[in-house]
Length: 458
Image (cartoon, rainbow, N blue to C red; front, top):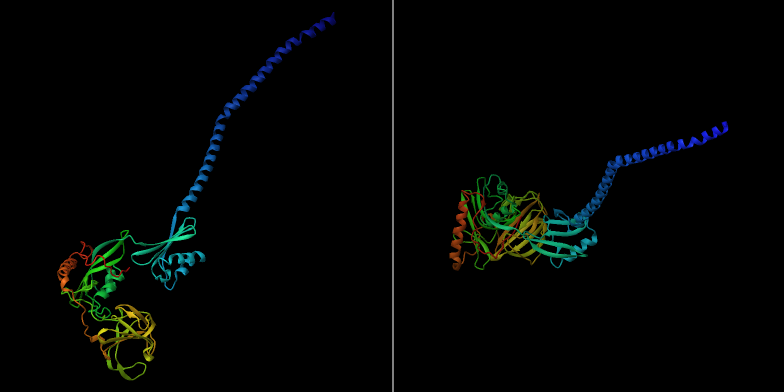
């Protein structure tokens, strides 16, 4: 009985434990599910942050790649200018190679330019511009030929296209006025004007005023001149239409007009040409007379008295010597105590001699024009220092150049007189207005010959 009772109890217990274990399993499963859901729900912000970070990094990388490509494009299109004045005693080939261009490229530039312009004729002081891309590739080279023209060589594949282009400046007529305190150069600089204008005034009045010796403090000048403007800045000068210079109380006036042959020339108010047979000096400026014409002068080297049949001008070695008049070169070369010499023959029986030169720039038989540089000063031969010994003969006899009466050139032609009077009146009125309006742009003056151009300068 007892055994039966125990067996019955043993059989009754299992049905009671099963439901409890099942319930516990369900609770555990629910807990796991809730924990998983809580983990998923709690991790949503972190996942969002990670996703946003990934997208941002991807976008940044993409933008960096695009920016790099843009920089390449920009650098290939960006132009970098390297512009400088051509140094003295430097060829264009030397300059370009020093700037980093290889010898082959330089050879191509010189060769391709030759049919349009010979780059062997470059001048010191003119501008050269080497244009490269931002990556350093050569794009173009330009050379300022003169005041009005620029030579452009543009890279096209393996060759260069060559063009001689005009400078796109505008021309205005302006007035310039000033007073000499020290020198004409300084007086012009005080008015913010360039040296070319000073030299031009010396050329215009060089027949009657020796600016190396005659300039005095208190001298005044008024000028009507064409100015070339580029980008609001002075690029250069055109024609001096009229000018006046008062020297020690004597007024010198000049008006630009055409001569009987149609060429432009300067005339006084009376219609007489300012051009004489000779300029007043074989040197333009800063050339004091150190020894005058004399029949008996003590020679500083020979230590005895002898004739000095010329005029000595003190000037540094290398100063330009100009022909005082149109003529033909008779001889050049060594002349004993006179050192290197140039001899010119002029109309009306005149000859001029230029002695003690350091270099000769003309050859026998060559025709030269008044004002043309024919040599440079030196100290060759019997000379104690650098200077120019200048001599003049007429019909074979030496004459004192400082006392020489210079014959005038042609006057205004009678057929042109009425036009000259109209031009003279307008231009002299503009000069007079500069006493009350010393500088600035003037009303356009009458153009004596629009199709003619005068010497240009910087």
